[in-house]
Amino acid sequence: MKTVRHILEVKGYDIWDIDPKASVFEALRRMADKDVGALVVMQDDRLVGILSERDYARKIVLLGKTSHETCVEDIMSTTVYTIHPDQTIHEAMEMMNRRKVRHLPVVENDRLIGVISIGDVVRMVIHSQRETIRSYEPKYRVI
Image 1: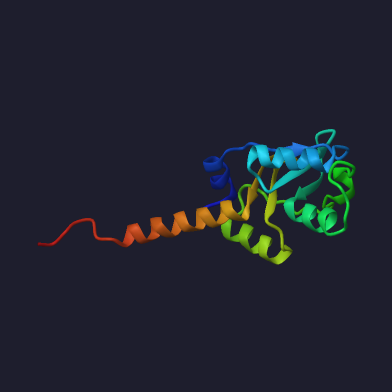
Image 2: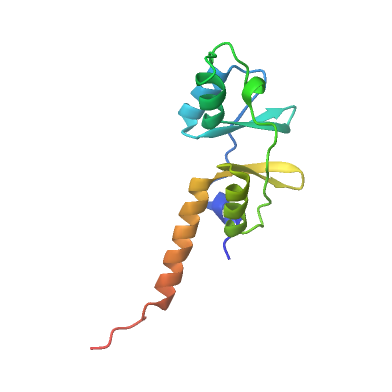
């Protein structure tokens, strides 16, 4: 069974973060530069929140605020669900579905080691299914 660690080994262990005092505009620029839909919010090497494009859409755009004048800490989600790298991709998918989140920080020994997205999980599920199908294909051809 594939695990969250397998996802990180494929996609990498890069962590894109932002300070809670940074402007939302700065966070959006970083998301665009890194081509990600969320940033973990770190303060003194401690995970304090997560900021997603959804937070921006619902807490800035719809409320008529500006991204230049609003701090990340004012709109970030402070309830952050995390996952262990040895949990399965199915557990990750179930957690994301149940908690209605699209990004999960990966924590091992109280240390943030990566972040996975629902897209990462779906890609790994598809890859695993293809491997399973290939394993059932005949190894030789009968003429």
